[in-house]
Length: 152
View 1 (tube, one colour):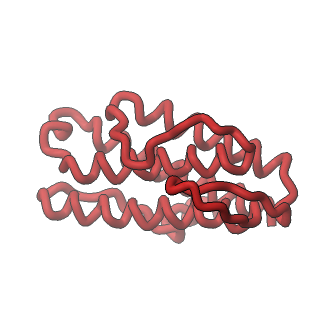
View 2 (view 1 turned 180 degrees about the vertical axis):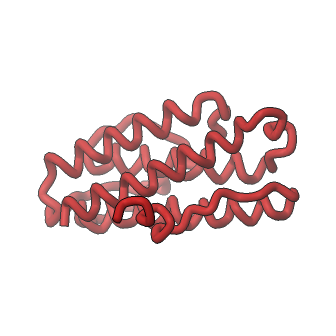
């Protein structure tokens, strides 16, 4: 299971970086929809929040805080490395407690949260693709099956 999660995290990481590259594609940054930047910022912030929760790190992170486009790659790299380290060292069945942004207490397994991180990122990349299309920009094709095409 851990190997499969590593592959899925690699897929998600690869396409997050591709979206970030697209944000920085020449003069395209003048056209990138503000909502697309906000959605990727949210995705990156949310992953950091979940990483922090799984490691009992209480560093405050605002889930909808904007990340400057020029800082997104570093944020993505840090998130990926942190999540991969968690995957390497944690028992996927470990249940941990956390508080949400409203202070309500919950618990979940490491396995479910890692799946959530991957799924959440995929969901928002789809929204970003729609924002790009609406702006007349060709979106990144980020389907998992295409990621796998060159692996066989």
